[in-house]
Image 1 (cartoon, rainbow, N blue to C red):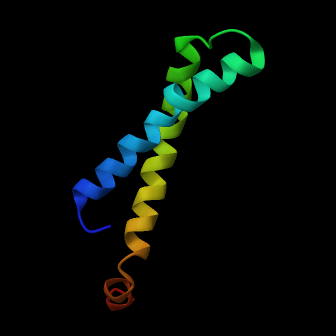
Image 2 (cartoon, one colour; image 1 turned 90 degrees about the vertical axis):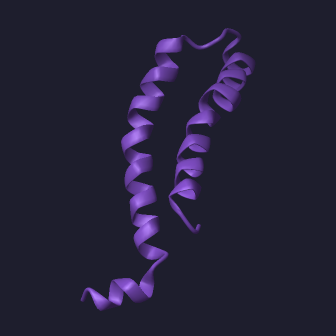
Length: 70
């Protein structure tokens, strides 16, 4: 990943899986659509975790710069 736009694209794409994949999967396995509250709750727990994961990944993608800070 090269810039801020790449990280933003990954973050946005990570939020799309819930309505696109989880909702139909829930319908096929449970027989009814999940409530919008479940999707929102998933996003609320997913957003901080994704932000941390992206931040860690961004730091790991710059190993030379990280060595200079040590």
